[in-house]
Structure formats: structure tokens, C-alpha cells
Length: 111
Length: 109
Image (cartoon, rainbow over all chains, first blue to last red):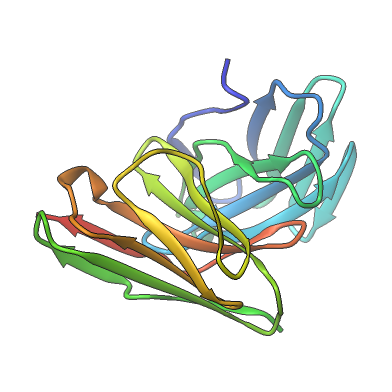
């Protein structure tokens, strides 16, 4: 079993839809959880960062971490065509340990 | 604020030629620096990381090497490129989260 599994996609939704992106992981030692957005031919940019379990909201984006189920989610409300990108989940055990990434899912928001 | 620069953005090189990709960080000292390669459908593969000048750790055996000649400079190199070295190379600076450069798309022909 891979340490981090992410739905492969691709995912296509109409503008205004609520998008749910998910990752599962196997290592209970992961404590820091991140979501990155990557536009085509660009480097990933950090979207959301959470420590341990709980929810975090930033505008139209909400990140959820459920450590008991080893499951993290990113919700995008009122999706826009500009949200079309690849989304990668990432996690690490400690503040100085290496990041482990999911493979990413490509989202397309249709106008 | 901290910024990370990576160049070139695009590179086409013949098989057997050398490679040098450079990454520099501004606005911080003694950063932890990383080189990743991203292939379609395979996610981000960690190649090298460095916690200080001259300190390099390699994650996977391969045709590439890395060097950290200065505190804020991280270089990815190869003496002879292979076709399989083609990919999207990303430099990252890491605190609790990672900050990435804009990447270099390398095509070996």
C-alpha cells in the first residue's frame, strides 16, 4: 500500500459546483497536511496547511483532516474556471521531515 | 519575504550531454532545499535534499547528482543525460510547508 493515495481523476465539474478532493494515507505518524495547486507548466503553490485533525477555511477553500480515518479532504465552493489545475495533497511526520505527496488530480471547471 | 528562483524554464538537450540546473533562495538563511522530479501520472519524486552547504542526501539511485556550494544555492547536475531523465524538475525550499520554484521542463532528445 502506498503511503499516500489520491484519486487519480481527472475530474470535470460545471462552474459553481462544490468540489471534493480526497487523499488517504497509511502512516499514522503524519501530523502536517497540505494541499497544493499546480497550474500547467508551473510549480505547485501552497493552498492550505493544517496541523493534526480539524478543519481550516480560507475563502472558498476548506481543508479537513480526519486522523482517526487517515483521510484528508479539500472542498472548493462555488468553483470557478480559474480553479482548473492539478491539486496535490502532501503530508509529513514532523516539522523537519520530508514531505510525501499524492500523485495529484487534475480538475477542470467548465464555464 | 522568501522567494525561490529556478532556471531555465525550458531545456532541450541531446542524449549524452551534461546538465546543470540552478536554484537560489532569497530572504532566508540555512534553508532546507530539495530537488523533485515530476512525471505525468507519477507525482512528485524526491531526488535530493540538503540541510546545509556541502550536505546532500540522495533518495534514489540515478544518473543525476546535486551540490550545495553556497547556503542559498542548490544545483542539479548530470554528466551524461539519458532519455529517461526527461521530466519536470522542481526545486523547493521547506520550512513546515514547501515552497516551490517555477520548474524546469527538460526534454532529452
